[in-house]
Image 1: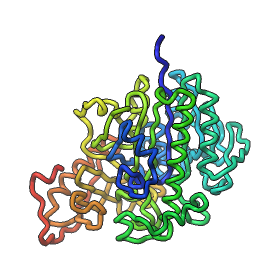
Image 2 (image 1 turned 90 degrees about the vertical axis):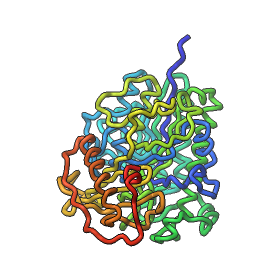
Image 3 (image 1 turned 90 degrees about the horizontal axis):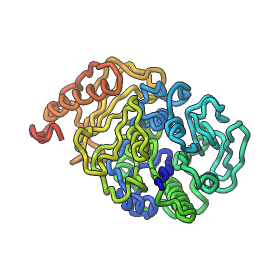
Image 4 (image 1 turned 30 degrees about the vertical axis):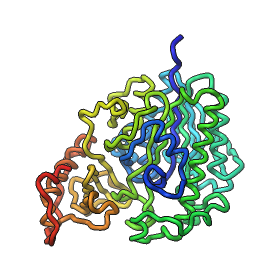
Length: 448
């Protein structure tokens, strides 16, 4: 008897920093389930969003395309109906498809059927933070009817996911569950955790970049950690449900997030910047094809997730997808893998960034309007960080005479990645030169 294709669950969080997890050094034991999943399966140690803002990142994850290719380069742009999503690809392969949670790719909160991305089952809201609160979860079914779900919002959504899994356990399913947490609740600009958990984590540990820069972290990080803890408990509940139904070993689970959170340390809000706190995300896979895959050191992008999931299920990856499957990496096949992650930045600015294992290089358009311009033909150098010696990005080295060779090299690599993503090759204006004191970079260090 032929083995049935594996089920697939995408466990998608909103605005979750990579260092909220134990495998990335968080000492608060917030994520024992994610950590166990990362050790059992395949952990993408260096995972990054390709667009650090909600809607565009979601469009990338649904389509395998960069934001400028989807045209969803900022929030408030509905996903074009002509674009194929993961729901179409899995559906054509015989899967039942389901979406539960925040969508952020439609024209209204009760998402019309034609804007639901082709999913068979629907229980969601376009901007979940606008129609619900932490203990008042409101979503909409496929016909647009309001559904009130009891419990803390993470728990309420997880209950709905478990019901769906139970009802579809006998046929291959693709379930995409998109949580709002640990995103802030807009109308109060706060991170509301389950009752009693904020006090548990306040004042205990804060990442070094936030400790140095301040922002709103000291006021909010306790609630933020509490939200991350409850998300991990939800992940554990889903895994328990799969085990109890006898389908855990034939289910691929992917955990990832749309972007990170810098707590107003880099600009006036929480993301939309080139910094690690904004672009680096926790990402791991477990299940068929991923178990015992180990820790990958390659730079993996959110746009790589769609082709990875299809490839792992034996479904042909569409030729138009711009990401790459990481499945070959789990087999040790590393030839041709990009040496940098490419990030498009919008809304706060029109920016572009690449991140190598050692260097971070970012540019912005001096006359670009982030809310209306998807790209520019002219950029100016803005940031250069040496992550080997400055992992918290506190010392911007752009313009230093000692680092001009690095900037020149990264400038060409960035232009190449922009062209590969379908953009026109721009001009990039070097930053004004300045003396670098004792700082020196050898020729061998330039390409690292």
